[in-house]
Image (cartoon, rainbow, N blue to C red; front, side, top):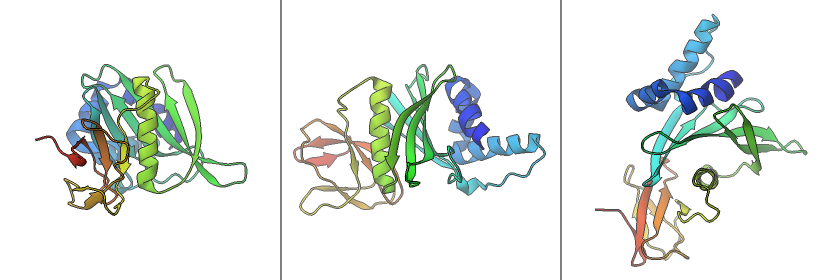
Length: 217
């Protein structure tokens, strides 16, 4: 599994147009499972994973950036991946491959390490963070990697969590209909906001106007 997550997938993400064709045509689950199954078959081994162990979703935080999050099987050892992120522009000219890797702290507690594979095969470790609520982890990871991809120190697109806050204007998830509420303090009219649904994990971009979150018509 290490070879697949840390050698083959980064290479395909950063260099292979065929991988993107398969991903866009068949979806993340079928593409990842099928590719890994071929690896095991070439070794005359039975794959120990199921298609349900893989998943993915894509979203566009701004006009020049597309993100595809790949959910991997739960890692059983260090440094296998919880998730991988593909960041690319609409023309797929500029691409980045980021990984969320299983690790341990000095006291033995589990950590997730935010890392990157570049086009020259170099592995970059940006440090470890604790394991927290899934929605909050994705929020932190996307914000951090977005800043790396766009070379920005101050991210103008806040990723907000799907937690109901009394007294704040809410918005329903466009996929599952869950009523989401957010802390809107600090937002200004015209700000773009990424919202993350904790029920179906959909991520979408909305706009803050007149004290409320609104979708573009």
